[in-house]
Length: 108
Image (tube, rainbow, N blue to C red):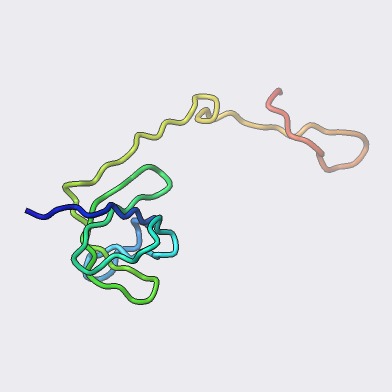
């Protein structure tokens, strides 16, 4: 049984999967002052609330390659407020004698 010494959080773009099906991330965005070691578990997360645990396989300078453990995947439910989700057309109002509208109005 392994003992978790520390939890390292690293921001990642989950679309950056390499040919070996590893997630590539930069340690520049890590919250820890020390670098992880190969074989160490880290938690990858993105700006949308998704997260996954993974094992560090390689480190090159500030680039880390992590094998995700997909059984640990969590995602946040994102909801859009109804006013932003509506398909409301916006029409330009004619102002003055010029041909180009200067503001947008939802009323028409």
